[in-house]
Image (cartoon, rainbow, N blue to C red):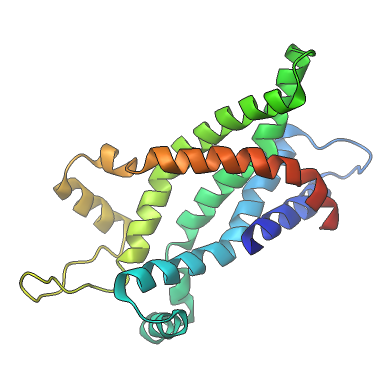
Length: 214
């Protein structure tokens, strides 16, 4: 996917900029910073793509028509609604598989030298993927609610437009009225955590192949 290629490339470039001595290994801090920056970079494509996708699913129409509707209603920057939240979410995710997972895998292999590398990678992926999921899921929930509130939808029961929450405070208010905020923040956590753990494992093996292309 384009966003994955962007994150790998941005991570490689960022590591080179942070590490003044190319002959030395990047420090854990440099790796974490590079991972977060690469996530923010990939969000430049991810955020508008998901905004169009979500609203196209909600309101119908083609991708081009929905893009025009957003731009006509909110200007060119309208497609970047909730970008900061997307950048935070992707920063956490990218840091997990580009930095945290490789670092944890190395530590596991040092503690248990006889352990097979794929086993260490699987264990590291599971732990870092679950932590990343737990940290980013509330952010993803707010991001999705903000983007889906871009246009009001018709209430089929009475023919009036439903209220929309165009700000984080508005989203939080609607969630408070609907029930327990914590449980809503983590709705759908299990399938998303499974996906992130799987991606962390797969992407970790691609990291060394794609970074030199940056």
